[in-house]
Length: 480
View 1: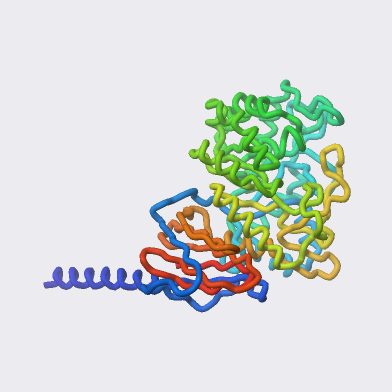
View 2: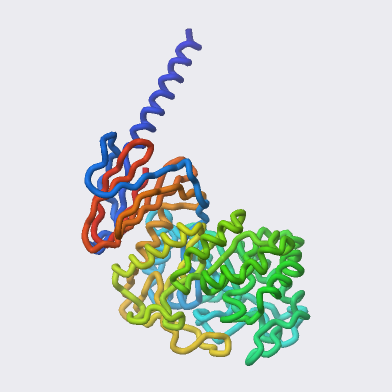
């Protein structure tokens, strides 16, 4: 008798669980950001229906067709950001960090970039590398101390991690000047220093790990060949294949490698096969990273992704910067929420091309679009105003979460690592829909309305329809 009762109880429990699961599948939670004033605002739940779609365009979701797995969303950690953050009262500093990294009350960034030593927004002191002692091939004077000072990127990372965890990716603009042929005219690395440079990379990773920070991905060069270090891709292949790759493999460190990152999608398309078509070099590459400073050529990334489909792709740097030639007619930084639509469409374009992670450049800057570092010989000009995710006025302490922040937050907060993009078909002018299946079996749909008026859309999934009214110039996240 007791076993029969237990069986009945189990059957009823399963039936109830299935019933509840079915009910939950009929309800979608909505969050909206729009020019009308909503900012990741939770709205009343919407119900799926069995009836035919109401007015508006229809988009079909087909989870039997799967694309890339998501690695994360975020921005970059620079001295300029922490210097600016440190101008705020202590409680407001924590508010900003919470807004960027907290998974419950903030954007919950899951992928961040941190540079190896000097770059254009490492602004807490003069240009530097981790060993500026000429000829120090033993790296006896190697030090990451500046990174863990009051304005250092290591300090920044540790403070951010109080609120959330995120993958870390680290590129290098330049090695120490003494490794170059000539810092003024011939900024390529002398091959005799390749073993020393491999050791330099490993010491950086080891010193960070000693301080509680594991760098997940090391990228050999930031925008090499034509912007910063003038090393060419055949030499990058040799450095990766014969020196850095084997040294890292033997080190026991868990860090994985990115070969380097081109400044534009078209450059990546043209130059990356030089490295990736060599099996001995390719075996050390875990992620293919690229930058988006052409603001176009998404099709080139889609072609690369198909060619090297075993490797995930990351768009790991882009921003507004006069030096990058865009925008031409706007004053930086940009306070208006409406600008977020630009970034929403770029995120859609890169994800549709197959990228797994999307990172903006500066997370935090001040009201001038700075402070920027100055070292023209290393490609750091003056002035160099740029647009960040968060603007902090150093004098008034006003904090502005830009349109970039809000549109990116819809992805970082709801499309978590491990989610898989699934097929979404349908087309109507000014509206885009992208859907992801979560590791738990749920769904996230990002719905972008670039029109200046509200519009209706229908999402069809598993024979049921979700009707949504999208506010003008908005992004809506539906989860179920």
